[in-house]
Image 1 (cartoon, rainbow, N blue to C red):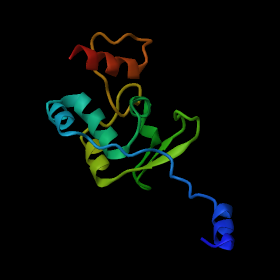
Image 2: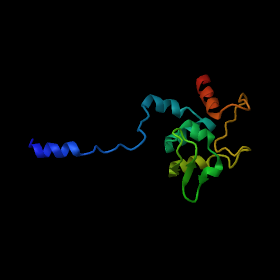
Image 3: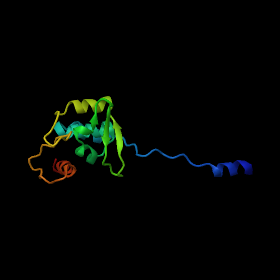
Image 4: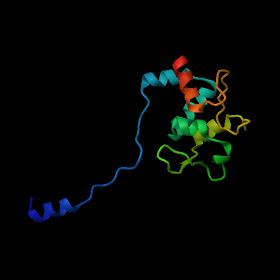
Length: 132
């Protein structure tokens, strides 16, 4: 390679990868997910449609959902930055199947009799996952 070409290549900056990662559901995981029902199924479907984390889903309130702009505004994310999640048609169908409001305003109700009043909602969902 001519020296002038290699000098130009050394000055090039590599392209930045977009944040996030892509993960596909394996067939054995798909079978397990197919057995879920009710409120737990709604949480899993929302995660699959949106890429949101469990903590973002369980803490989401209806006031964050903007149906007019087809977006969900997340103020508290893992990295501390605000982000907006688009509402896809698949996510809209999940949201349409949920009760309009809970007393606390959460989008995803977690109706567990053993839920402690001061527990984090994410911990409650993880506990159900271990029990079942």
